[in-house]
Image 1 (cartoon, rainbow, N blue to C red):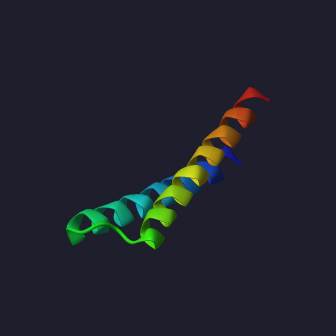
Image 2: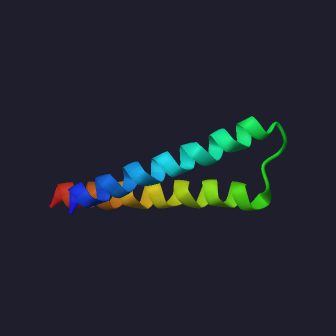
Length: 58
């Protein structure tokens, strides 16, 4: 399970980086939708990391 969570985390980080790069290249404030996606991905990554930590404790 940790391997699958790690792979998911990696994919989410890549997606988040792409959104941030696109926002930076636009040269304007990112849309509310883009900011929400970036934030949602961050929350999801945190949840995945917490779950991975719990699995390692068991």
